[in-house]
Image (cartoon, rainbow over all chains, first blue to last red; front, side, top):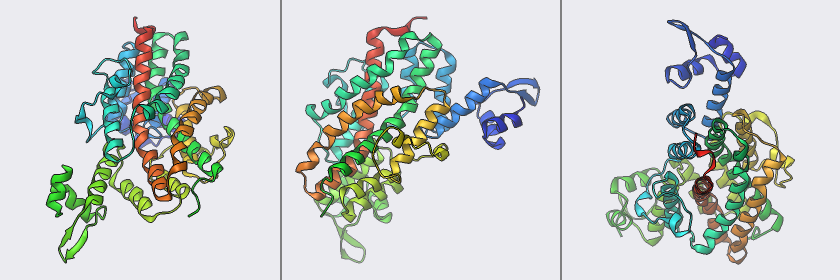
Length: 199
Length: 199
């Protein structure tokens, strides 16, 4: 199909698609110097870009990195690490070298990108005067271990390509789901409990 | 103390502090038309702004909304809802009205901001071709209920002001911790398992 049809199929405006092409995020099969055709894979790719820039709130630069990781077909661990590195802009508090991951007994290579994300996140919690200690860490780690085990179960039955896609996209796209659910469950619990609502 | 001392105490550059003042995020006690003094509360406020713009990756406009919520002293539910509304830019997929929260049996008012966040997040998961059904939702809801119950436990012993601060800041600042931990636990599990790493 031509790019105008791709726009119709996906509901994404033509100028946006042309922008994706210029930015190298979308590449059709060339049929002439200034003409290209697109197929079902491109429909999927356009939806994926929309999903990553939408709810996952990624910048185009971050999306490009994630798409590169998907395209290059490395093993799932490397792919996941590279995708994680492209996410969450970590700024400001990353110089503490608190190595919280090691302190909590999480076994990952020291240079895995999320090690630094965790240190920065914990430093921000402390800087804001919120509590952080082993007991509080356990509040998060215990249920998250359960969640993560369930999330990775399907990987066992996937071939390598599907595993990479699932690992990379799952990392980015279930995150907003988790945050939204946590916010909702907070509200449900506080409202249901009628906690210190009245002055 | 003067603003230059506040800069020394907090390690935040003077031009940045002056910018906060101009933007109305920081307000000293005026001693003369062009002079103001600052105290320990301001040290805390500057650290808080740093924490919110740093690991929580909030824009100054979002930070302003969170600080307003803290300053106005409404009840915790209202405050939490307003803070949640200022977070996560939800774009692109929010028009589905899938009402996932209601479908999952989460009891919150229909107009609670995170209801729309969840719909958008689930729509993005689906748009990217990732699976979503009741069984998958349970993978997240079951451990999150456990996490949220533990998080809200301390609220019972807090007075109203502390409860609002904890609810508002806790929503924003533990989120990056949760995401970093999930990414680390994924890596730990995949590496430990030696899953489909080899080609």
